[in-house]
Amino acid sequence: MLAYNMAETAVCDLPGCGDEGVIISRLSPEGYLVATGKKAYSFREAYRRFHYCQNHHDELMSGVWSRVRTPEDKKEGHVAPTAI
Image (cartoon, rainbow, N blue to C red; front, top):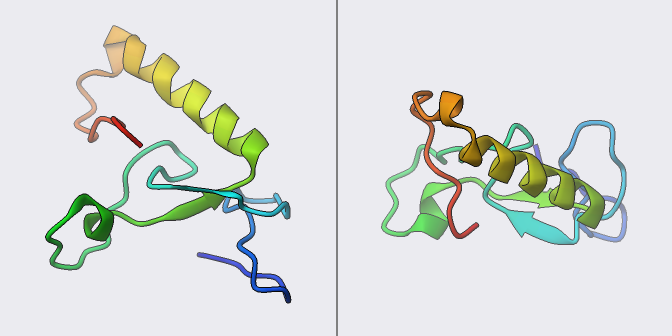
C-alpha cells in the first residue's frame, strides 16, 4: 500500500520505515515483481510500483543480486529482476 505524508511525498514502502521514498522500483519489499492484475501493454503497466528510501533500495538490490547469483534459487519460478 502506498502511503503519503501531508506534503504529498511518497513514503518508503518497506514496513516500519517512515523515510521519504525517493526511488521508484518495480521490486516488492520481498524482492520480486508483483503483477498489477490489469491488462497491460508494457512493462510499466504490468507491474506494481514501490517507493523506497535510498538505504532500503540499496539493501533490496544487494539481496536481489546475491539471490540471482546463487544456483539454489533458480527453480523458484519468479520473474528475474532485470533492468529494474
